[in-house]
Amino acid sequence: MQEDYISKIRSAYNQFTKAEKKVADYILAHPREVLFMSISDLAEACDVGDTSVFRFCKTMNVKGYQEFKMMLSLSMRSGETAIPSTDDDVIDLEDDFDNLSKKVLMENISAIKETYNLIDAAQMKEVMNAMTSAERIVFFGIGTSMLTAMKAMNKFLRIEPKVVCNMDVNMQLIMASTLTDKDVALIFSYSGSTKDTVEIAKYAKKANAKTVVITRFAKSQLTQYADILLLCGANEGNLQTGSTSAEISQLFLVDVMYSEYYRRHYKRCKPIWDSTTEAVKDKNYLG
Image (tube, rainbow, N blue to C red; front, side):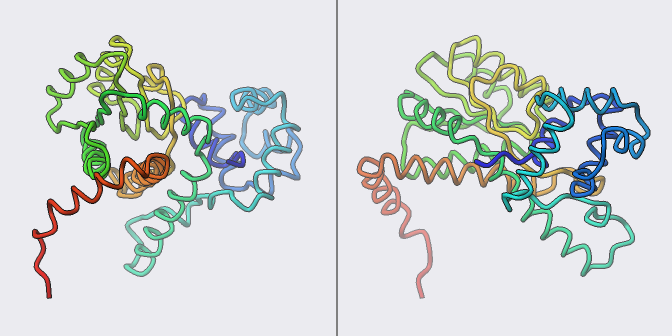
């Protein structure tokens, strides 16, 4: 996918220092203005030193401020950059219903767009190859992410019988400890910092299973155990903890993985789809 530096800044946000977060906040709020600012102008606007801006650029894996501005400019010209979040987009107590519903809509649209921009085709190919060769595909998640893991299992079970998921946390830990190098563990976590989720990843890694992490931030306690990393979009505001936009961004990735897996293995998966559809066809009232 086209490199999207707005999305990339958001994904790296939790690893920035306090001063770097000031720089990131300003860029996220004023991306176009930054293109015409010198490093000193930006530092002054953020109330930090020039060195903080330079460190921010190093954290973003570019050689310097000019290269960062060039990459940001190319990203914005691509027309694929996710809609930047501003204070006007954040839900607050003063919103009437019309404004609130509009903000929720834009947040969900932005989450999907940003997730799309963050898709790494090479990483997705690795996921598909790992799932194809695996003896078991096991989905893991805690809390809201557990619901995403269950939805992923329910979706894939329609076309692939080797998928597994368990809702109980202790059972997930036990399952992770019994994985082998022939299995794939797909672990969902928005924050990447939930203790049980990190423990699951540790056990999966220790068992030499291929570990796929689906998360918001590029670096966290969880991502250090990832063989393959898939990033999702969506930022949760003060009134949006556990918001569906975070879940929607993960489910969008599930849909992409499912569709690509089905496309790759259509001849084998189609008879399974027919069989599972037949099994539940009488569960709905007709007419």
